[in-house]
Image (tube, rainbow, N blue to C red):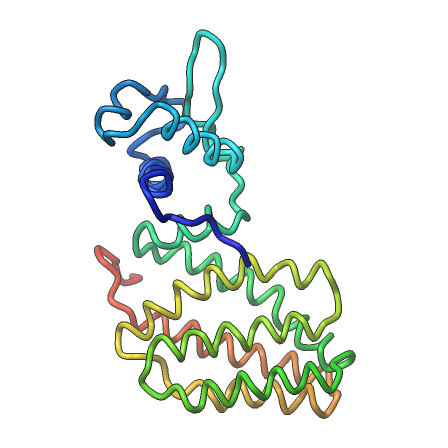
Length: 238
């Protein structure tokens, strides 16, 4: 999954402007003061325009004669773009955003596990087993644990042998990466190996219904892990 590089002045300019748009600091319809931004960021007009081209390609901004460059309505944003997702998830700890991720995963991943149980090849099972091994050996190393979890879910989608399902990797992996970093940063989830192994065992037995159920139970555990986080300004349900 390719992402836009934030390296250098150009990349940093893209990141800052994207965050301002996503947080509403630059509101929908607002016209950008290019002269002011150029002075604030201390960049050339060429660098600023290149940054705006990146954001325009992702549906965040547009330019019109006499109006200038402005922030497009949220409905025009490419929310499934890997970078927009990453910026969106990373901009702040917003519980509702992770609720959306869980709902999406609940729609996609049990079905993916069912397909994988019907279609997985020996290579697919080897990739799932390798991810499980990496998960087991990661221990308390958050970086390795996150990488292993992403590898598992990537291998699961690949095992469906459905190209459209595999493309959901962009959404699931981007959101999952941010979710995993937060959970591990807060002390880590419960041992993830048993729930993930149950999915692989069902796939290995070529039992679609059991694989879907096991994935559903894994997702229930993921919801509980996020629920344990202490969100800023979060109100407990009445």
